[in-house]
Length: 208
Image (cartoon, rainbow, N blue to C red):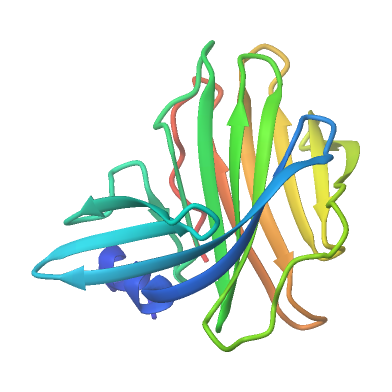
């Protein structure tokens, strides 16, 4: 796939079909609050994409439908994607990032208040028949303060090979950058970044 392929095509070629999953919601201290198994079915029928997420414990299904990817959805050459608001500011916001490699995906939903993280939901997803379940024990993320390009950041380490980095600007409310990186093995690294300008506007994906 190349960037010349329509975003819709890039999204569906990698992410379409059925995914089983295990979601773990973590509090701002990085400790698991709850977890729930899911099944996601992504279909394209009569020009409409539907992503229907079923919570297996309750049987409740939540659908999302669109004819074209939303304007604020960014899709990389490899089919990784992020979704969220098109600008940041002094208000709470949600960002969702997803990376995929073959029959497996890693996904996060970050809920951020005006000043700090409210919760981070981490999902391991896999194709039916693939063995890739979550940890047996409650998940605890390793949180580390760091600097990215001179700006303060927090790194959430998950499963030993997944990192979420949240970057803040000293004078701007809310994060200016959120990235999800999955080191699949020594040779394969999947990454997607959602980056905002100093004025809070969503920046284009970097060229790959």
